[in-house]
Image 1 (cartoon, rainbow, N blue to C red):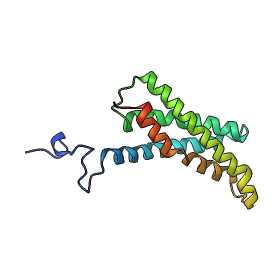
Image 2 (image 1 turned 30 degrees about the horizontal axis):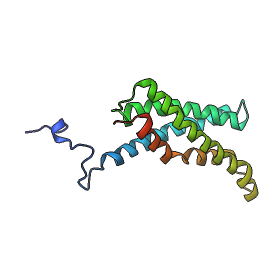
Image 3 (image 1 turned 120 degrees about the horizontal axis):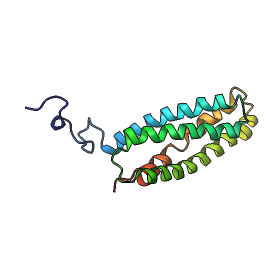
Image 4 (image 1 turned 45 degrees about the vertical axis):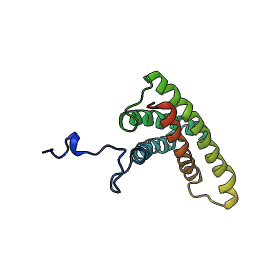
Length: 153
């Protein structure tokens, strides 16, 4: 007889029975949740930083705050079985996120400085642009972290 919650009663993450998501789906869902929390840190810290500095440096510093949050949460909850040593994880996390921050800045600036003004959008244009910019690199970041930062084999 197995107890509820014992390892024998819990199916492996990579088994698909129609009810249990497979390992990649579960991992991506956890990545989205931790990424969402990190994005909130990123987004709201940018608003705070914007009180003392221009928009672009505020985006970069806010991104760094979100990146640190994301690294810690991903290491603890999403990619727990990585074979990479900590310093390799940190290196690849930075590389993947430098690519992502470039995407974020590009999208944020194009929207806030080009598209939104042409559309006559003035309601929190920088915040809306930055929010969209933060969402853009979700898939590329997941793939980069899965295969480079926290690779398992």
